Image (cartoon, rainbow, N blue to C red; front, side):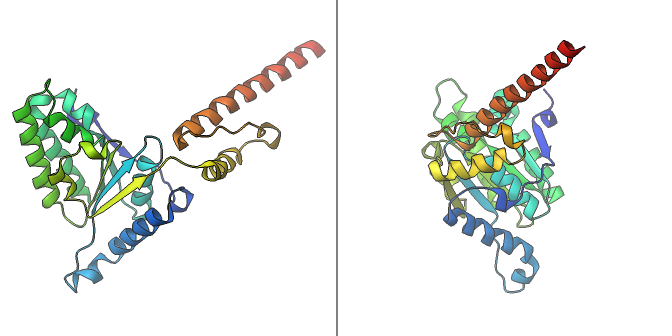
Length: 242
């Protein structure tokens, strides 16, 4: 598989205000975005902007959409790579491939989003991997992070925070935890999801104790079933009248 087949340059635009997360997380992200908007002014005072963010917590709770929203707010491209796919694809060339991806993000002054970042830490101790290769990979990642320019932004995501090497964790200036949504947050999200559909189809029972991603899949699946059933009913009615 070609390296660039593993890389996604996402063009989806997501507004930060459309996301649902804690006020603490929102405050930290708004501050980071402001720093990057005024980066040249801050440089005059030898102040470096924070450009390395780690998003961790439950799957499906908004880490990827948060990275896209940051890119949208800064009017930057976002380069997305799943590290587990990259490592499994070409174990002997992983360090070279990761460096090529960092170089691409730096050239484009883009947001680089590394998903499943825990694969690096977990793979170092795994019995079924080349441990020496994993150690070289971690050293490469540390160097790339240390020299990552402030004009670009590095965002990493993991569901397994404790699996990541502490040397890597220290490189991130901002670490944000994503919790499972409570009933109030899910009700707000359901309202947003259903708002774009006909009113008579919006009466769908809400499910709780699930992630935002699971809630979205549930609503979309249920809505598709309802719309198709309505279309089939109308077709049968027309055919009966003919």
